Length: 211
Image 1 (cartoon, rainbow, N blue to C red):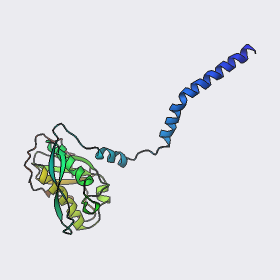
Image 2 (image 1 turned 60 degrees about the vertical axis):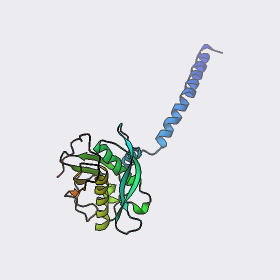
Image 3 (image 1 turned 45 degrees about the vertical axis):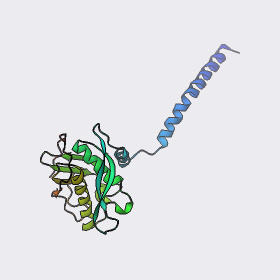
C-alpha cells in the first residue's frame, strides 16, 4: 500500500470518527429546527401560568368574583385558597392571573381564558392600572352586560383582597382603548370599593403615560 493511500485512509477514518462524535449534537439541532417557533402569545402564557411567588406570600382565603352559577348575569364571591404577597402590586397580579386561570368552570369565566395580564401599576393616589393582552378585548363576547361584568369582576376582586385601591384604569396592550369590545367605555376610571383589611406595604413602579 502506497504512503499516499495510507494517508488518505487515515484522514477519512478521522473524519468518520469526528462525524460520529458530532452526530448526536447535529440530531438535536435538527430536532430543534423542526419544532415550530413559539409565538409571543405562547411565551406570554407560559410565563403567566408560572405562579408569581414573592418572599412575603401567605396562603389566604381570597374572594374571587366570577359569574354566579345560580343567578344569571350577576357576580358571586367565590372563596379560594391562594398564596398572596404583602406587596399590593404583586398581590394584585396574583389575583388577576387567578381570575383568568382559576375559574371553577368555563361557564363562570368573566375574562377570556386566552387573555393575559401584561403589567399592573399602582399610583400613590390609589389608581390601579391593569394592562391586558389584545385577547382581553378580542376574546370578549361583545355586549354591554358581558363587558360590564368583566370590569366589575376585576374591580371587586381587587377591592376585596387589596387595600388602598380606589379606582381602576384598564389598558389593552399598553394602550388606552376606546371600548372593551364595542360597548364599555375604557377612557375613564372605574371605582373600586375597598373591602380588604391588608394594608399595602410596598410602593409601586411608575405607570406608563395614558391618554
